[in-house]
Image (cartoon, rainbow, N blue to C red; front, side):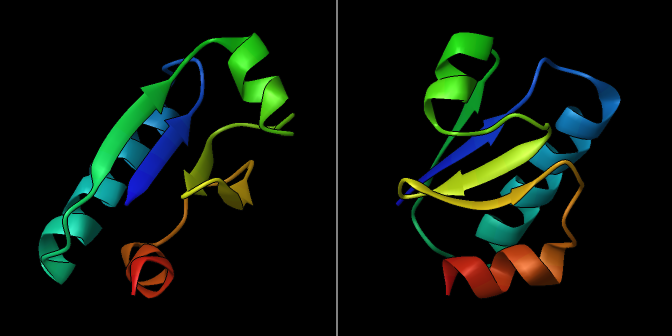
Length: 76
């Protein structure tokens, strides 16, 4: 599983990264968590509001910090 955390590195983006990592650990799944800070790369994913979470190529949320329980549902 590949999880991309997209954003410029602001406080909200950092919080999303930590929340994603906590959700992955809680579920015990194997996932590569990748931080994407390049705006061109983010735009190619169809994202225009950050922070955003992309799991296996599918945009799960944009413009907000999701709850850990939400992320856990997304990763199964």
